[in-house]
Image (cartoon, rainbow, N blue to C red; front, side, top):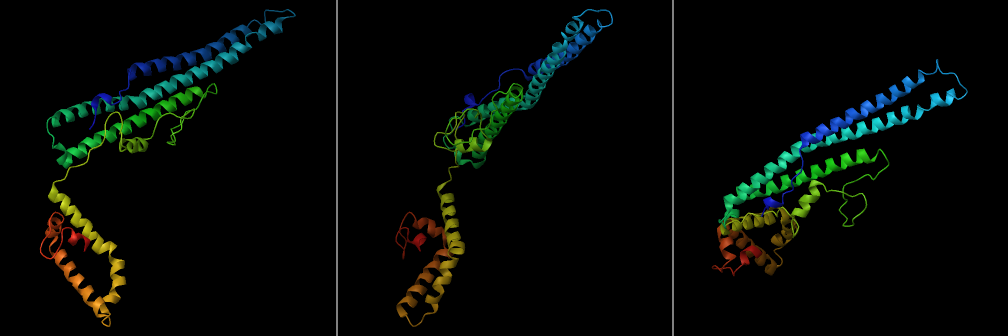
Length: 281
């Protein structure tokens, strides 16, 4: 059953975060241009300052120009990475909030109804909510990896990658794909935000499914067996095999034309058949 309270929620205001990112981007740009301006202004001393150490004095602002420009560019990269993250995560944040609300409404709608999972549409709705949560969480993890990697690359920091699912925690692994989350969802323990449900079919529908499986065995899986057994049906020189084969075919014809009895026979014996014999036939 889905657990609305455990559906991950993304903290923070993405609009505010994007605004901070824009401030960083602007500051980085300004820093770069300011450092160039400082050096350019300083070089204006060249025509009016004449001394043996003049070259040293004029070269003093060289590092300001190069370092300031580089730092400004890096700050701009950080700002743009944050803006991109905010833009990517904003709809994911809204989706997870919506899914939590939908999950709460769903749980409330089936509260006290022990037979709700007999309704296939409700089961599908429930399971769809879980897979949508998985997709949103995976997308959020991917956005986090992308943003962190962009910033970390500026100074040779760690580059994160999706967990490879081998069960061994390795440095740099962060987050899972939606397929991996779906697989975990269907495991014995499920995920913190819930486990999928299966439709509880009424006994007669289970029986019809059994008939369908039986007919598949006759029509598809039994084709090769039919070809192998064909010689027996025409082997009139072996009377025991001949009579056994045609007797079995008589039973088979009876079963195919009375599929409902096939269901009944799974629960009780009927004339000519022990309990369960029709399906075995």
